[in-house]
Image (tube, rainbow, N blue to C red; front, side):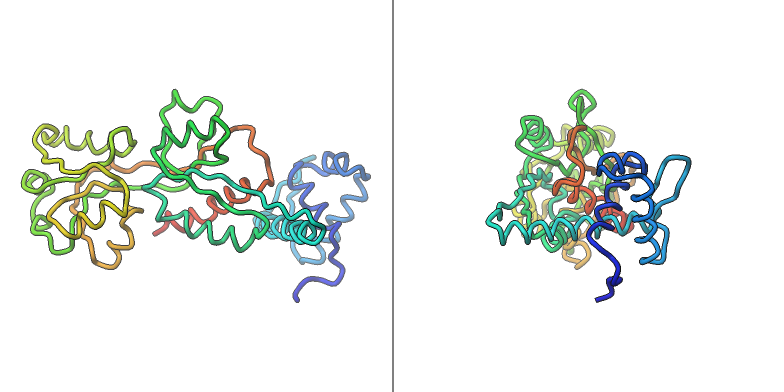
Length: 305
């Protein structure tokens, strides 16, 4: 192991206390120790790791980039240790993180994050519910969900909730790879071939209707199905001449494999923010908060695709 010989559990607990409190003095009060003793413990840990974990600005102790990275691993280590103790002492109840995931983002970022969470937090499991954005937000308000991963709800529905940006998602018009319409302009293709629209009430449906109205197609497009569900929409598109308005994340694998093609719509208002919605009074350092931190970290790589 690469763990310094002198590193003790108290070093990690002290570090996490200061990271949470934001000042040495507040963390010392919370842990019922003297400020000099806590400062010494943090200094020992920084010496063992060979790097500064905090930047001291006045009374504030702000995590450095190295400290931010170490915090995630330190927190995960303590939580895994607690899970092991519970398992051996008969307190083996698993925490459940209840997450609402919009169908249009369920097959993109979320599965990779969920797998990482499962590896790092064996003491907790994730319960996933999918559905329309409004339904998921209502479930969270009633206490049925801890987090919602999806689009930002209208301002009138966001009272008491926070929206944390993760990445931008574009709505594409897709077709099977050898579709005759891919050689046409999108407007001409939409005039000639049947269409699958997102479900009524979905946020991307509003964006798509804006495009159709601006293109003079809202009364003439031949709508045959309405869905954002990958298991339904994908076979329909691959086995027919239908065109599908759908978020990039749903069909990204098929696009990268060359199984589907896109028609360039040439507008920028079909791109919207995907993020994390939760209540303002969420519990820090809970399994749900840990999942949120993983989503934010992974989203940086996901948005750089």
